[in-house]
Amino acid sequence: MTSLALKIKAGGATASAAVIDAMGYWEPFLAFGVVEGTAIKTRDSEDGAMLSAGINLSLSSGVLTPSDKSTVPYERVVVDGRTPEDVSEGILKDIVEKSKGKGRENIGVITIVGFSGVGKGTTVAKLKSSLVSLRSDTNPDRVLCWSNGNIFRSLTVLTSLYMQSKNLKNVEEVISGEGSEELKKELMGCLSFEINDSTGEFDTHIVGFGVDYWVKDIETTVLKGPLVSGKIPTVARSTQGEVVKFVCAAVKKLTTVSNFDVIVEGRAETVDYVESDYRYEMVMEDDGVIGVRRAAQRVAGAVGDVEEKGDEEVLEMLKKVVGEIA
Image 1 (cartoon, rainbow, N blue to C red):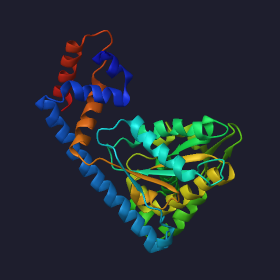
Image 2: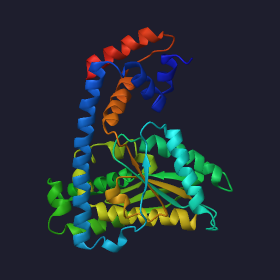
Image 3: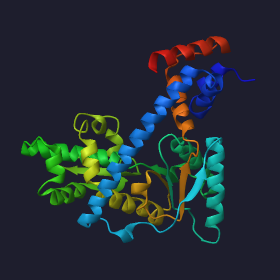
Image 4: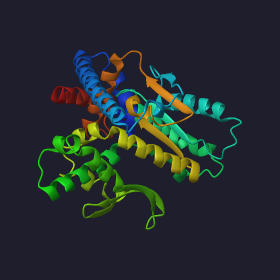
């Protein structure tokens, strides 16, 4: 039998499941799960409202039109009691079935949506590995996971640079006020999705307001620095439609011109506008589990070095962590 220490050391879903198995009976841990679950629901509700407001703004301004929204329904994937491997295998089986007879070398675009805590990230990572085996070239570099986050961050950097050049302070007025529609067109004109000759890989290129960046070179530095901090929610709310259009063009270039497979993962409010024949919504019917899983993730991540420690000692360490962070 695998020890509790080894399970936690494995990380990811294995570690979370181990923490839940070890402490799922303990009231302080369950209470911590309730607190985490409430926080997740609140954040999801706030995020959903912000995304919807941004999409509605884009519809009213004509950046998006109702016809841009995909008409392909989502397949509902219930994840309660299932491992990410099982969920991924189920989605892959459906993709294989739907792709029969299409005569394409690649699958194309796969969209996966769901609220926080349902396991999208882990499932997508498993699915990415499995998709490689479906390709005739079995090339792992031709299967990508797309996230909109760096595009919003890139726009925020450009917005900050524009504000600095004009000595402006109020990001809300700049990105949403008078003249903002023309500004957003100018900002989007500074972004392109192309092959970086120095790496041979597709990347987002940022050129304008005195900078020339490739996103992969700055995603852990500039895109998480002071030019972005505090401004990204405001910029993201006002540029939903612009980013959706950018994403659609990028994934189309990847999948139809270069035969990549791309998994687009996120919230339905925006992913609804990304065209795909393979659409999946991950749901957890017992939403109380989401908080417990998030609590387990936090505890497993904070427990420290458990190597070569017995199960009882590890359990006491886990309980101590709950007391410290709950």
